[in-house]
Image (cartoon, rainbow, N blue to C red; front, side, top):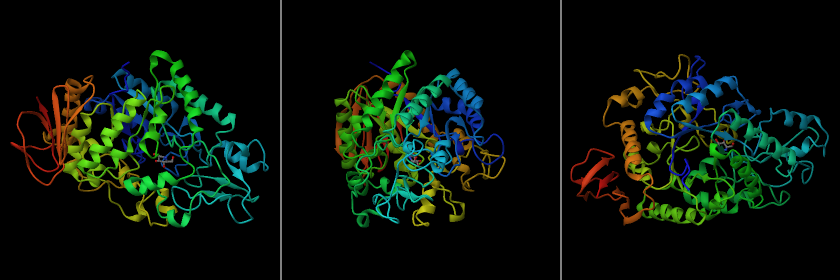
Length: 518
Ligand code: NOJ
């Protein structure tokens, strides 16, 4: 049966970087609401909001101190309600983030745990253990942000944190944790949310906590979120990592699915962040009684290589079919280098056309439609805990989080009246929304046109047939053939071009894509 998310285009908004409404240099909910008409005009179906909950903001809001309240830097619950209302009034659905793997150390539960004795109920909501000896943590697991995954507290016990030490992992074997999240899910649905993006969805179940699973010598340099972006390293690492993708996690999602389904016609949807390998493991999260989608990070981080892309995309199409699910495609998010910087601006435009014709749902990260590169900054501007926990060895993800340039000649380009929390590049005038709207050949106008034609030609047109798979990668869906040139040669073309990633004549230059009517 067709569901709204099967072929939806979902626009990710990173609230802190979208639009500031009060001059404090950080984006907020009112700012987002004021820009929803722009989002609608892009032609997307839904927005996904990265966290805006109460947070000390040690990890860009993925450190949640109260999952059922809005952080004052983003506004109020009433602002959230108004945002949902405005979105719905213009036909946009709203997906919110949920962060069930950990809370912030500022959450009242963690504060209570610190004050409570060993073995208490309060400690049992997290993973508190005695060490192997006075100075050695219970195991040798390494945090994804660098350094050990354990921090010791005053009475000698250690707590587990797969990310920053300010993000203690929750104990999902404790029914109270599960109940609390169910309440959070209902809370946001009742306030108007249409779906959830589930953070670290593969990480909730912890098993074998007393076992050292790998040789940290070999992996300590690899265990970083930014290494997850390098395909080969990532896959060998994911295959060894002990605290991800345990079978127990699926029971949680089967329970959540019942909650989502209980809202019937509201068609609540959940998309999982799953870093697992091989890709077949990811499809287990979208079994018919679990979640609806998972992010396909393999394509997001794929090399610009036709053989790789062909194999990755065709495998994924086959794998999700086994679960009667639909695939998702994304090229960027708030954790990855921006696609225009990763593969080059011309190839990024071509890849956009290539994935927007595929069956399934597409995610666009705010600014991607502008062809925005990753922002550059000096180390003194950086805020990502990855930068600090690795003593600057890893630069972290701030480059992908630099605020949106909207209008005008110089930074902050209409984002704020104050000092932006991360610097916008002074030479970004050509990337502003204002500038790109006026330029017919801009990346923004390419995305707008692609989303229009996607509705006209692709939606509901079912599966694809690959036509060429080497150098020139192409597939046919319905009346349209989609071609991308991933070779270093020009390739002759014939037929009626309905959309091209660059202005072209009768050949397809390297790193360009077209939609051909056949
Ligand atoms: C994945 C999120 O996308 C990332 O931004 C965050 O740092 C980690 N999960 C921890 O919540």
